[in-house]
Length: 349
Ligand code: NAD
Ligand code: TYD
Image (cartoon, rainbow, N blue to C red):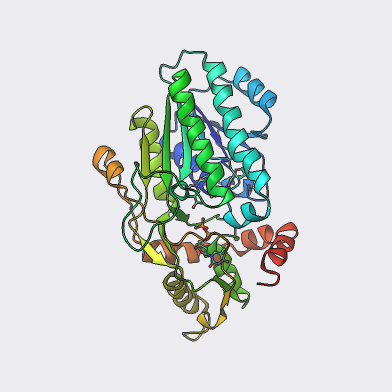
């Protein structure tokens, strides 16, 4: 079995690549990644020497490059994660999100369609998507696989569009596809522009913790390794053309999560209780900020037997431990260009 993973140098992709190489040692895994600011080969240091792992640097917006890659290799499957993934960046640079997330996905679908040329037996195109395509919830209810799409940010609109193209390739050409829509992930190797690693890094440096609006928005958090486990299960056992929601049944308002995180950080850094929380600074809300996400993952549990493996308290503790033990990783990714982005993003907020 030869699987092409796109975006394997990113946060979730690197956990997935490691999981596949470990759990399926007979598989070959090719990791295709453009290595944007979010792609980091250091995330895969521990597996890069494995004989069944290969890295290819490339851009999914380049159709000719993809055609060549699919001609040189006989991929049995594609697990597609490569994307621009940060909502705040999508607000400042929406076109980049259309290029990678929409055009890139269509190019990849087309390359697989042409290479497999109707011989779809044993083939699979797995598209990794987000719960953000469903829009926002009020205080009640959860997203199911039948919730109508209602994206609000350029990021979620680009992911929604890519999901539609994946289904269109299934319905039009018979391409064997499967899609999953997952809630917010957390864990090691997440780029520190997302809430949890950003706040860990800021607490470490005694910098303000910029809470958008009143901190009342709700997210449903999932341990990244549990996402990788779910993708593996769905890749192998999910039904053709189906969608599976993945989530932790783990809803937190941002401010409650931040308080929990601050408590763990005070303890780990030997600071007095309340020290980290005093860094909380309320800033102007994100434009179009979705109030609440909550995933109903009962289909995945019922049909494929998947359940999350860790409680949030355990996972957050492990996450903090990882960032504090890997400060050189944090320093490396927060230097240079990122610093410039960060200053621009929070200027005047
Ligand atoms: P990430 O930003 O950490 O990683 C994305 C990776 O894609 C990077 O390695 C980057 O270099 C690569 N990439 C970007 N554009 C590319 C291009 N044009 N060609 C080739 N490679 C390119 O993102 P992540 O958090 O790991 O998310 C991975 C996928 O999972 C995305 O599709 C995202 O929409 C989805 N997802 C993320 C979350 C989450 O909480 N992070 C939740 C649900 C779904
Ligand atoms: P984020 O990690 O960017 O994920 P997403 O927007 O995909 O859910 O943000 C998680 C929540 O935290 C979201 O409600 C926005 C909020 N947030 C802040 O309050 N401050 C910040 O600096 C960041 C990055 C996010």
